[in-house]
Length: 210
Image 1 (cartoon, rainbow, N blue to C red):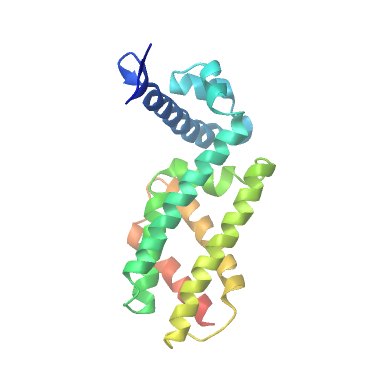
Image 2 (cartoon, rainbow, N blue to C red):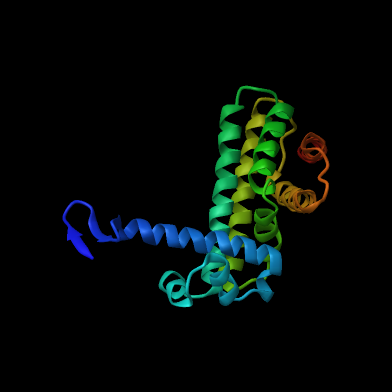
């Protein structure tokens, strides 16, 4: 191992930081596979290490245990899906409510549901997985509710839907959408994506317009 003032520590010709990032990414990818396949409660550090082709020593250099690994994985999936929905809502701000809802639903379903492992882990396996994961799950649900309620309030200000208290409605919508996405993602064969989006969009329009 040598030290370079510009690139930092090197190992086998590669910056140590790059190797650590790659190793962490391998653990996250393997956790996605193992948690979805075996269920979080039935998973083990050994199974994750075997899938990643890495050692338990390397695992504990990165994570304190399975819960910290699940939490990071969950945060990553949630962030990706929420960013996709935010981009969709921003880009569709000048279109009608129904078209905007269709686009936001599509962004969410494609991001979290296109990979059945992500849907299974983020929508099912995280429930009751541990105190830190549960705390994040509840906070994330509130943030989703606030995001969607804000979009509904904007539509109400433009006279597209009735005014109302949207936050509670959005929490109900989130539960229904996640259940449908989980079932759709794990189906074989899957129903057409457009059919799923059409059903979810009409459900949301009915809820916010009530």
